[in-house]
Image 1: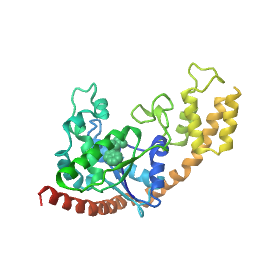
Image 2: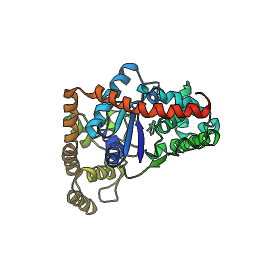
Image 3: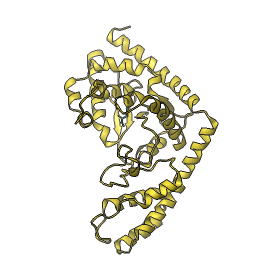
Image 4: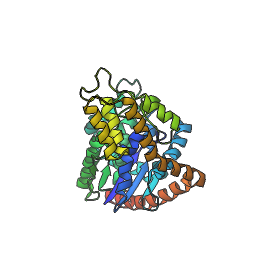
Length: 324
Ligand code: TRP
């Protein structure tokens, strides 16, 4: 299978990214051809993205992904803007994408709500995403639930292109599920993300003291008496514990919870210890990568490999549409 996925360079990775998506990206490397892209053009649609930060965020994300186990010997890791064929294909695909479909995209509606100025690339975002995937004729795309609609749009675009110009692109299938849905520590009703502020997430590379503080102050049972069901905050701490601690440790705490004897302080202390142990190899590798200074070289080699595939696809596409 050829796998493609993209991630926006919004700064350092957090544990929600890792347990929700990146861990699966790492696993998919076994037995598949994987192409992983840092989508900096997509990041530009966010007007809060400033140039100096974008530059460092791309680099930081690349090192983070490598530290998590993306293996540049096996997989292609590169930055989208280093392969100009993405935008070239995007334009051509826009000529078969339906305007009406794009007006129905939930993410566009959410991101453009309450905004005085809406840049047009935000509207066009799903077409570029389709170009990312189709450029490599990927058959499978690991994504979160929130990207399913964009994947469906990519499938429609592939279908319309194939119908109008002849069979060219496979229709990409999403790979869903399995990844854990980690919630914010400060507001466990919402998904962990950076946009809500630093109290809401734990960065993979964050100083240990700061992680301890965040785990300790994680919201637990607002309005619920211990022993009476499980609040979203406590459920989130248990989900995290399941990811990093042995089953018997989790069971012990679950038993205490059922018996109404769970002390959140103990749960948090244990979670912190096991979480740090799980993150340690990633943090160490990140340090080594920094010292080796090979990040830029790896991305350049990745872009080279991606471009070789992209060029072939574009040659074929140009011929199909009559631009050769
Ligand atoms: N839109 C995706 C997200 O926000 C990122 C992305 C861009 C992507 N291009 C892609 C994901 C291609 C999968 C395939 O998460």
